[in-house]
Image (cartoon, rainbow, N blue to C red; front, side):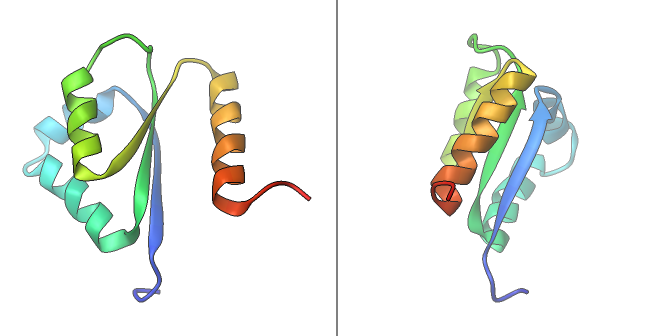
Length: 92
């Protein structure tokens, strides 16, 4: 499977930023994961829409992550539906 690109989908909350800071080379690991996967990455963050962690979210985007904020479980269902349609096409 090494020859096939993979898309990383990470569903988490704002604790990811503490992890990226606390793990040695955490931000480098996040960048390397995208590079090695070869198919991009989406980080879905269960956290409020306000400007909390704005600099860190921007840093993820600069690394190549597609970042989405969700505040309710209903948002997660809407996101999953939209992601599926975008990635795999309309339902038949």
